[in-house]
Image 1 (spheres, rainbow, N blue to C red):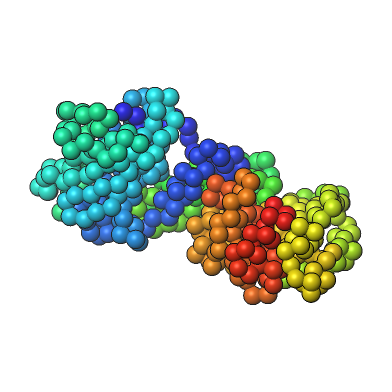
Image 2: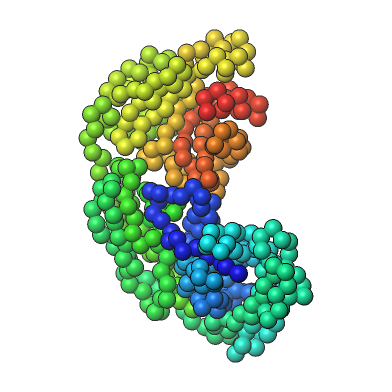
Length: 424
């Protein structure tokens, strides 16, 4: 049986598509706020010895549990890296069910193996559970399997807890914030120190933020600055772990990434409010929009313009015949030749706390999302936003683009779908 991959977690510039959904889950795991008291709230919660390492099980706000690697766990030549979520658990008392991450012989991740956890000894000196797991796609574990007796694809292990529920150890406490070193310039690499902590931490977890928004996949000690960071402030948050749990996060001071001068690509304004994105406003004619961006080069098509800005430009769409054919005569006359949507992948722009690079799960906490609408390689979401409709383009759980659309033609599922298909 194999559980893990040799690959390390990469900084956000690469954001591998094949593991993006795993990264989105991992970023959520790094925001846990456990304490020793919380860890003792359920028999399954705590730090378990597994595969030469440790997995800490912590209860989530919905009552489920996550199992996060805090020291590397190895099986069959593959190693679960620190901070990986390998267990998703539900249940109470002494019996639990859920899933865990398997890996093929070449250490390629294969999540979803159905699993059981049964606590068989609650003696404080030898707290023990039996963990059984079946290969993904093979159904639940065979109940006749035992740690020394695998059955079919079901394997079982006897696990002991590193600290018993009766023992107490205070989580680490930050005494000095982490610090960022290096040159804050696109293409350069920054490093984040651990800061100083009490409680002798055994593991540290990192999360880089862009103007306060977690950067998906940026969970290493180092981070390669992206062009999308230009004009924004980068910070690094560190969480320390010991046998008592996770300490409260500690965040570094921010470092600003300068915006370089690029001819015919002026600095982006970052303005997004109501019916306005940057310099363009919904309802403008094409001539008006182009006058506003007269200093930007333009890669225009028949019903779209792309105005160059630094670090990233703005797309503007005009009502196409395809869209106009779905509208009544009065709306056709009103919108013909006019701006009906504008969007950008520039993280300088924010709609209700959501910027490009955020996870769609995080966006759902700020916006009342409709969707997803699966068109081509992308998933699209819409949300009411005062005088317009917020538009999010999502791929692999990450918001790649945000924008605004005309409110009157984005009411109801049929109209929303017609609107999105007209330009996506």
